[in-house]
Amino acid sequence: MSERHKPRTPREKYGEELRLRRIAVGLTQGELGNQVVCSPTLISHFEAGRRLPKPDDARQIDLALKTDGFFERWLKDLDNKYDVHFAAAAELEQQASLIQQFAITLVPGMLQTPDYARAVFAAYRPNHTAEELDDDVVIRTQRARILADPVKPEVWTLLDEAVLRRSIGGPQVMAEQLHRIADLAEVGRLRLHVVPYDVGAHALVQSLLTLMSFEDSAPVAYIEAFLIGQLLDDPALVSASQTAYSLALSDALSHQKSLALVRAAAEEHTHGQQ
Image (tube, rainbow, N blue to C red; front, side, top):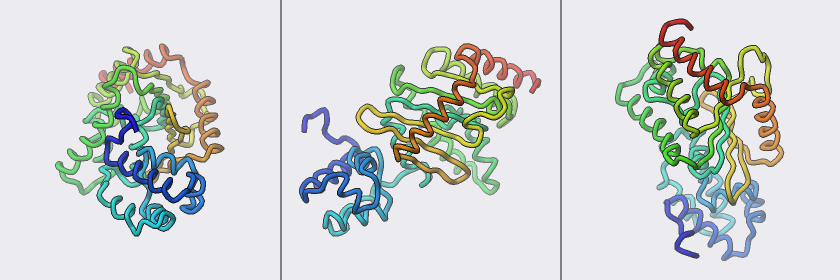
């Protein structure tokens, strides 16, 4: 393996070891997937270090590869700072070449300002400490690091107009949040579109959705509700999700009109006109 392709992170080392052990026993990704009861695509993600198996999957991998609990034990050392339902999606987010996100009520996590994120966390955690909120805010806002690269990943952000209108954290917090999104869109860091209220029903009116594409692997989709998230890698479901995104996008305003609407909404929050 060349220096450029050597595993770098603990997850990548985990995946590389899995790949080597699988090859050593003469199994293809599909054959291992059959024994673990998952898709070959998921095995591919494990081996690339983009995702970690769940404990039950790691147990089945050990049985299939006759590794005596090796992968299940190692998994316990790779603790994830994200909630269980989002952990896999967070790992993939760091590897994606294209992220297409749709939000129906809240600003997507990677775009949230600290004050906006704090207001979101505080709203559903009535018994919290300031320290707990601080930790959660840091974890969430750290996701914005992937935007530090001016080119990769390519990010499309599709928002229902409700995201602009619901006041989270108060007028000033909302104004700062919307100006941040507009700033990123204005410098070309993200493609911005808004589905206006007057569209009515649209293809994604029922769900948050994130699509992720990769340079060397199959695309995935992620959907989320309260304390629940599901990563989809079944090709039929991913294709259906991509179609729904395209349909909703076709109902949205242009990039320039969306940018103007977000700026205007920020000013309305500032002056109490919402």
